[in-house]
Length: 304
Ligand SMILES: Nc1ncnc2c1ncn2[C@@H]1O[C@H](COP(=O)(O)OP(=O)(O)OP(=O)(O)O)[C@@H](O)[C@H]1O
Ligand SMILES: [Mg+2]
View 1 (cartoon, rainbow, N blue to C red):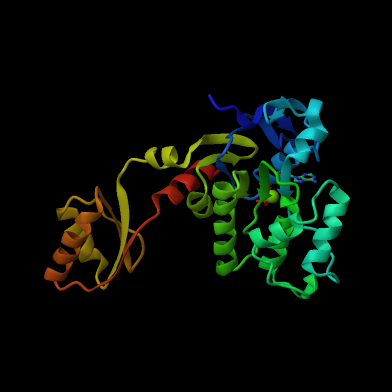
View 2 (view 1 turned 45 degrees about the horizontal axis):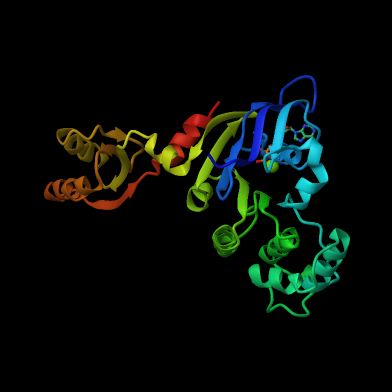
């Protein structure tokens, strides 16, 4: 079996005596994966990341990185990790290259040409003189990522990298993550509170709530863990008649609100038949949407 790049066993941490913020967490991140660490606000994602990076001291359990106990090889191990947590600290009055030069000097052992390489990877090479204070949030986030890539990390740990980005910024971040994983062989551990984000970028997923792991497996296994049925939301001009028709078709209708109805079907290709039936009875269909079942599964897992 391939050795996991991150493994924790029974990891525990509390900020105060009154509650356990991380309890008995068993993380297993396969080498080569893009691992999505998913949980609602306050579930313990950042705390876990701080523990993995040695920014907080664990109170119980074990952490190993690259197959070695974390404490024994702290400096060596951290040299192989790149991390981006919260807002990267950047010098606003300097440009991207100058910021990277300072970060490289601070780290030591970074060859000169690496600065151009990382700028290329995060697609900031074209920005020559612009000072960082004039950067968009997405550009700042990419520069932060570039800094974390200076030492060619084997493992990249990103805490909510899409936070605060606009849709374009999010798409850029997603494709960067994929590229780093596929073309640069980097294992990526990425936290998010959005299932849709994890689903799009990750091969593996760990779901936490209140510091406990609820589910950990491949994203494909998460999808397969569902019943296979689809919930479809339909908006019409006559919800109650539409509901009667759906009942005749054995689609378990459930009136969601005045305009819309949820029905349950087995396969996508039952949708055209349903629409034909509604239209034959003079019902106007305004909208048909397959609901994201995975999103509902995540909500049901993480709801209190
Ligand atoms: N410095 C701190 N002192 C005391 N409690 C803290 C501290 N930081 C976090 N906590 C608590 O620990 C728990 C986990 O917080 P954490 O920041 O790890 O969650 P998160 O999953 O990263 O949330 P978010 O999605 O909001 O970033 C929360 O109950 C939080 O209130
Ligand atoms: Mg956090």
